[in-house]
Image (tube, rainbow, N blue to C red; front, side):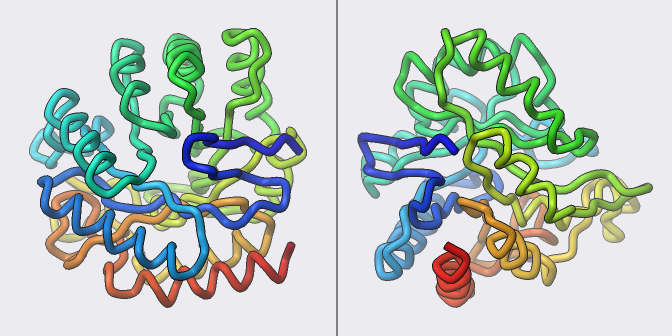
Length: 283
């Protein structure tokens, strides 16, 4: 398997490297919250000896309702992410949604993320790959809820064709649609994606979503099963995941986006310590 690196940050993915933690907020709410979350998680990961990448979205484009909070938008959101990067000295991961966003995002983010719903959008994948390659970052592609693990080969082929053969893609497991309003994670899929020769992460947060099934809004937003996040994260690391993607909030029930799926920030240390132990045992 190809080991990928964010050289500037001395972070390696896969190939026996330490478990990488990609964690932060679902969406940017304001700068103070972003700074506090980044500093807290960086300190925890530092104590545990785990490489850390701060994640937050500047725009949540795939919303159930026009009334759902989406974030500050591209310009303001990138300003906040750049400030977090500068003040906390951490690499950044964030999502893109259109080809036009790729260059400005790649200039700030070290890990450019393609959402699961958009993983087969050829123009987006090609633009993201080229912009990320030019900026020296890596591409983090979430497997669509509708894709078999082995079908991700086509995504990897697109990236290589667009970049002259560059190895720069991580794949992310986040569950498959299983009937209405439900997702199921097939842990065997992690090994299947690793057979494609790339590092694989687990998005345990979005894997517990119940799309369009938030009982508080009558289906106008996504529900979730917060208690399942740690279960899926631990199982995925045991199955060979090279990194974990997790979203936290100091007060999850008051989070402005997907509150039922994010974890309390004060529980991060215990969970990450457990995940580190599982990863070391497996490897």
